[in-house]
Every structure is written in structure tokens, then in C-alpha cells.
Image (cartoon, rainbow, N blue to C red; front, top):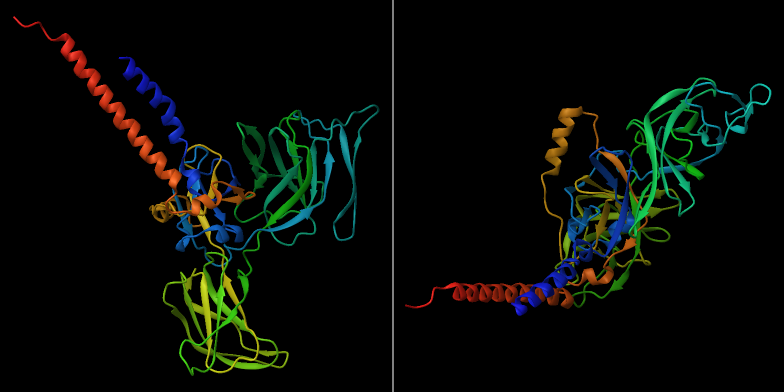
Length: 460
């Protein structure tokens, strides 16, 4: 019995340590997600360059979303239509501290402001009404958005790190500083830390169509729980404009001809991430007219695949230049090659254009959530999330979209170790876990046999 107890105690101590190597250890990096609208359930987050640079698998199969416990949540890659993939345009806004309106509605102060001819606030002052009137602590914010020309999708507020905060603000809008209207959104600002994990929410999101107002006023619902704000910025909605592509400009290397006597020149380029390339451009210094072939491949040992039929790129004078060309099919290959049909006067630059994608996910499990990327061990599961989104859109109307989320600063997880397919430590853990389970099962079985023998009746 002492042996069985020893093995059981050993297993109880060892198994949690073995189980601690969870999904987080399978990924190189993570980006904490800041949810724009609390309780929305479904969210979409635009991917930035850092995500593409750390992804290793084609199709971003090693990019996923996990909950606070490290468990994957339902997530899928989404390529939005025109205007949806634009990175957030941010503008810093001036703001002024004001006393919050009392719950009774009896305001004992008046707002005195000096406004420029273009509507910008030069000075704002709160003055008490009546002799000895007190205007109270300056816990509300008056935000000057008069210079903005695009709808405001969200406000992002910044305060000093290390502040424990859970505050809700009432949001009002005005165009003349006299008449104020309530905004549908109520913003909750959170900055909490426990057990080495941080829950941070800096954004106050508005309706998907955005908010148009010259001035905004934020008043705390609890004057004792306020954020020590030090900066305010607006996230602007520019979806009415065509979505611009982002470009990666590459300098290549000239490579030798594959066959003796072959004319022309070849240049190879390496892309620094899994970007979904959909358009290309080639440029040379000075005047030129060169016929090109474009090829790409996923690995250095894979055969080259033609991506564009032969075409001629040219430049004559300062204004005469050929335009960029669209690829028939998007490609996230890492290696690219340009082949010319004649001598090339100089070293070409290859520009690869792409439209950022989004990750759509369901807020399943426990927050906080994080986007993870970079793994040679695991891949995101294919889930019927697009069908779920279509069903929600049919239920809630054609204009419904998942709420927005934003990427926080990148943080290291397993780092380079997650990019090793067969990690020795991982195999050691697996075999040791099985060994403990097998030994435990044998000991328990032996213990059961001993008990049965001890309880058998004596022979006649």
C-alpha cells in the first residue's frame, strides 16, 4: 500500500507540471486584444505587419485567438470588402478637464469658452454660479473634435501605467457647446492586473457608421472612480474612400542563368512575412523598357510557379511610367523571382501590394483574449464561422458586423522554440506523462489483486 500511495502522490505532483505546457507554448508571439464593445460576443481585429512577419504557415494557419486560460476560441480569417481592411486612422485630440454634472441635474457652474474662427477651442473655463458656489472636482472631459472631417469610430484614452481602474463614462455630443445629446455608447475604461496578467480597455467605441460631432463630453457615472487621463485620440472612419494597399518594397539579388548561353537576367527576392500579395510593381532607375516574367514559391526547395504572364514595364521621362499589375490569384509565398528577356540596366525594386485581412472570432471562454502567431507544432482548426456570421447577419440585419477589437503590443510567448517542429523537451514531457500513467495503472491493478486475495475465504 505504501508503494501505491507513493506513486499516486508522485503523479499528483507531476501531472499538473506536465499539463502546464498548454497552447501558449505552441506559439512564438501574442498580441493582447482590446475589445471595442463589451459583451458584443463576436469581434473582428485587423492584422498588422507584425502578425504577418511572425506567421510561418501558408494561409496564416498558425495564427489563432485564445482566451485567458490559453484555450483556442472559434476564429477564422476574413478578407473584407472595399473600405473594411483599412488600418485605423488615428488623430490626437485636445481635451479640457471639467467638473462632472451632478446626479441631481442642478448644475452650479457654467462653461466659458473661447472659440477660434474655425471652431477650435482656444480656452475652456468652468465658473461657479452664485456667491460661494463650488464647481467640484475636475473629473469630466471636454474633447475638441472640431478639426475632424471623418466620422469618429472610437475614442482611445491614455493614462499613466500602474493605475488600477474600472470606470464607466457617459458620452455626450454637441456642435455648439450649448445643446448636448446623449451618444448611444457608454464607455467603460478598465486597467486591472492580477497574477501577472493585465486586463486593459482604453477604447470607447461608437456605432459602426461612426459619430459626427464637433465636441464630445465624457462624464464619469461614479466621480470616485475616474481615469487620470493624459491623452485622447480618435479612431476615424474612412470607409467611404477606396481602401489603399500596403506595399512591401524589396531589394533583390542578381542570380546566374540556369542554362549556359541564356540571355537576359534574373533577380530573386525574399519577402519578410506571410503577406497576402495581390498586386506587384517593378521599378528601375532612369528610362527603361524591360519585359518581365514573375514567379514565386513557398520554399527554397520548391519549384517556381508563374504568377504573371510576360509583360513590359517601362519609364520614359518623369511622367511616363507603366502602372502596377494585379495578380490573378493572391499569394503569400515567401520567395519571388523576376526574369527579364534581355539585359537589365540596373537593379530592379520589386514592390508587393496587399490588403490587410481580419481575424473574426467568438468571445468564447474567459477573457482576456489574445491573438497568437508563429508555430511549427499546431494549426488553427477550420470551423464553420463564416456560416455563423451569415446567420447572425440574417438575424440582426444586413448592416450588422462583428464589433471591432484592436491589437495590443506584441509580447513573446515560446519564441523561437515554437518554430521547431519536434522539440526534444516536448517529446520528453509526452513520454514521461505516459510512463507515469502506465506505472500508476500497474500499481493500482496490483493493489486490487492483493486486496482480492486477502479477502478470499480460507480453503476447507
